Image 1 (cartoon, rainbow, N blue to C red):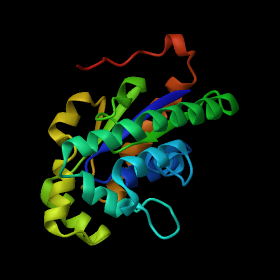
Image 2: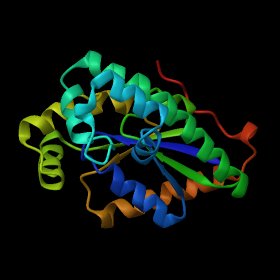
Image 3: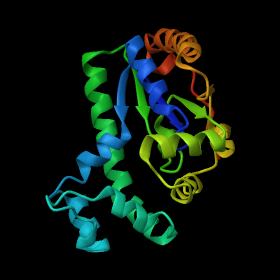
Image 4: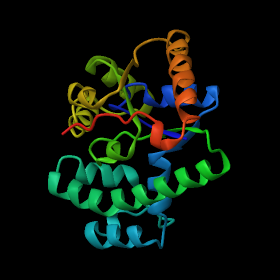
Length: 214
């Protein structure tokens, strides 16, 4: 088994790359989906979030209003840190649980952990390899506005709320250009998948360890 961390910036093309790896046969674990699971109504993280930020972050069905919560924390570092302290450790535990479950059923699996905040949450330290998907800020803004309907100011705020892509690149074992069309990205992903597949078949102790960045 080999565990690959996949990250990038807002609307950089990360999700597209994850889908291409899945096409190849990789198992994809999405951090965003894990986050939704751990903050489901009634769960401990949900209770802590409501206690910390108040009932205004809830929708009528008692699920978290992610848009309202994002607006509340993204321009307030202390609030964002408080939210991350509640969510990130629980997401990490769920990622490890799912990874282990896949590895038991498929010992030679290539597992992609798709996480926008991989490095911010220090989850890259648990990965065997890290892929960073890059894009220019104008393209990020254009995609975020078209895909998510975000005003330019809000999209910029979200981009600036993440580590700059130039910083994330320092942690990368592999860098993919997320501005490429899918037809040009696919061969790069297939080549990486074949490399990962070969390494996944090796015993864990003989897999070459990735350098740890400070």
